[in-house]
Image 1 (spheres, one colour):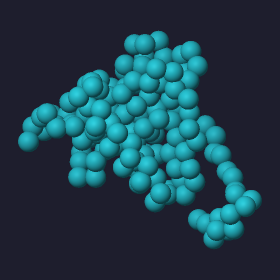
Image 2: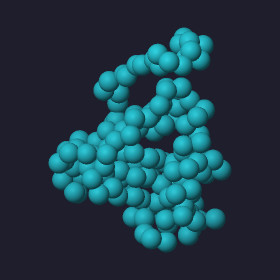
Image 3: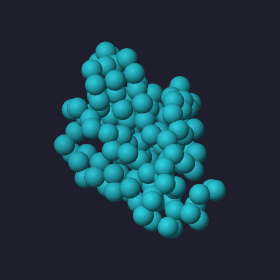
Length: 147
């Protein structure tokens, strides 16, 4: 396998992999506490990454207000993790967004998803606000309160 990671803008050919990554990301998010609040993106952009011609990761981001962008999804398939694909995606997306006159970028990671938090922090995205909450109608949240 070619050891050089490619990153490119997603094309219609990548539609199935983008849908699969979104589904797998949602399934994986069930492993962590908390939730990701949906953010409305204006004209989202997507990039894919991998080796050779095989896509193993994707990133989706879009503007939320003029100049302010949000990364709504970063996903790397399990067998390709810890091999630089996530870093390549974030680095490429930040460069592209800068060229599009982006002045701010944000993202969200769930409590306990240390690998995603660490990925963001390696590229200079650091916590701005910690949001806390509790369901007042779901007593099962009590057992997770101290985690």
